[in-house]
Length: 184
Picture 1 (cartoon, rainbow, N blue to C red):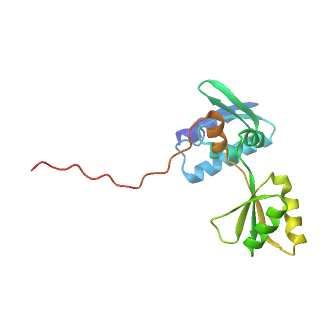
Picture 2: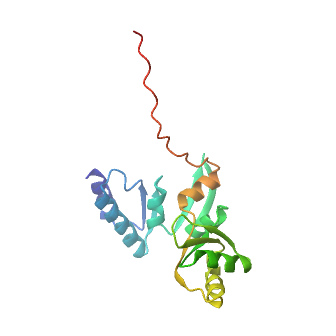
Picture 3: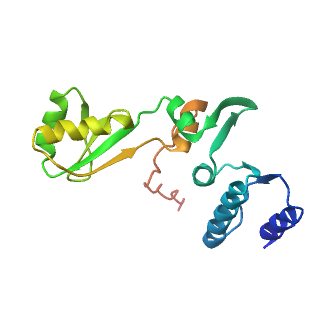
């Protein structure tokens, strides 16, 4: 409630620039969703909203541009797509198709790098998203028709980790350490 009251108080003066530090902190899921709508609506009114947050998934949902700062240094600034593109992480197109083996063969023959996906009926094609039409054409020319096509790109969090040189998170070790032996 304190978070909501503080934001309401800031909005009373109808500022042209609103600076929010971790605006979703302490809010329940419904409150976080309301905060997203509020931030977007303020920006849609033509006002500037600056959001400082460590919750990069939230930033992706409400911001048009971002600035990445690490250890007091400006690392990258621009639109979210620009930051993702400059992160050095690959984007890929996922093809949903009935015959993945035939599709992979056709796409590899056309010069595309193809890899299997864990989901049955899907293959990944390492290519710029704007090349999706050429993937579709190559498959259609071979009488193979898509069930679906989607672009998968790096998250802002993955881009941040790559740009800042932070190590990727390690998987959680599910092993339970044995209890210390008691001396009898």
